[in-house]
Image (cartoon, rainbow, N blue to C red; front, side, top):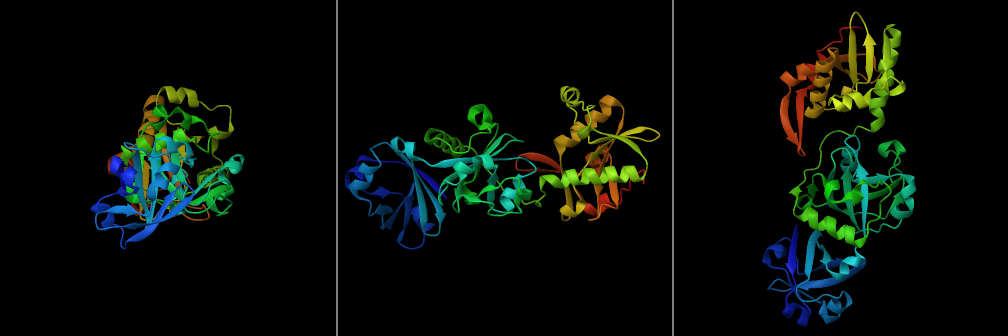
Length: 367
């Protein structure tokens, strides 16, 4: 829970802050910790909803004056973080982490953010309680604010993202105060800079203000699917084709890549082009055992695969391995899941959902 408050002359004069009864009800007890930057204060609530124990020295130290805006966020049963919009903004300590569609689930499932080793210098400065933001490069969405639940560390979880992002920090968040800002890089162009991790005070304050006005964000609940799972599936599918003596082009490993042409016609680059009686484009997906009861695919991806089929006149097939040893495979056309799948909105993304059992019935036309 978070509140925004403008300081009155009486509060500044007598050294207290009135936060109201609604906020008090969320905090059992009359004494708790107030976190301001790296400082911790023990304060008391009175019957009128006032924070006592601050004094005039507190306001002088942080240069607070009448009309300044403060933000109070409940981060624990007896902890509140106070942030300022004004002169104290110069001392905000915040960091930016990036993710993609492939890595975001793991961020939430492990309550962990990670970034490349070149940012280790910035990450090792992170202290518990610092402000964190997460920028999704795939969707161009900014998510936050998060709170650092640990100091920045090196390979806190060695298995996370298969070790690709070793500069890590544990994170926590308040689901009632987690927001998402769409097309965030249009408003904040510095988000496009992949060399940024530690934010300036001004950048952090601007992001906090923008997120306060944005929609609430619902963290993903799906399985952890590390990025290399899909490439492993591609490698195993290539072995399958070799074993069946089926000729193919693998677009990720050949100069025949035509991504630019496909981008112009809003089609998706497939993983393979195989040559049977008629050629077939193949899009390889992670093993179905990575999912639980339902397969979830972005509607936009299906539309782009349908566009590929429509524009080229070549059949498109989406294939999945269904066992750990990659011996059995299943496949279906984009038009099949378009017709059979149930549409749903997950984190502002339209997806198609279909039971795993139905997918397992769709055998490959070759094997």
